[in-house]
Image 1 (cartoon, one colour):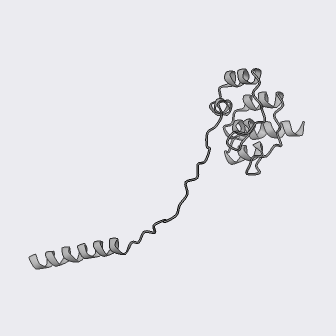
Image 2 (cartoon, rainbow, N blue to C red):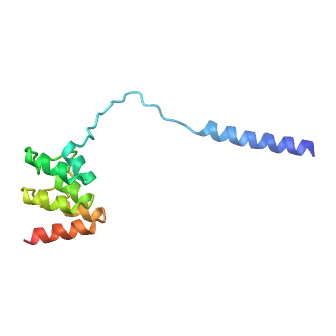
Image 3 (cartoon, helix red, strand yellow):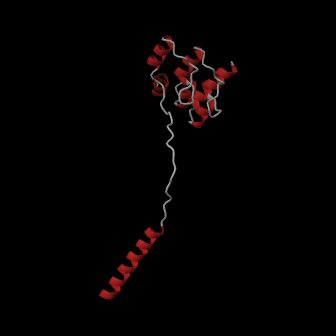
Length: 129
């Protein structure tokens, strides 16, 4: 019985070591580090958080309602996070409903992708007007 247990344990150890021995890893001799800017400006952060008072204040101070941040316009952030009051505020201050992101998507697309039904409804109504 002892021999059987020892043989089984040895076989299991051999199987595990064989598995690790056959796993190969590729090494990269020449590689480059690419820095990607993923920071979002404070205006769009306030929109994503739903802080309408800060958004209003930044607009009063001259924030561009169509300036992209990380590839998306403020209206796209509002649509993505279902911020209906902010959508209305942005459009009232000149936000372009049909402007596209770097990925070719509009605010309506972001609302649809995020299942933000209220935002999608408001954008559709504003687009018809």
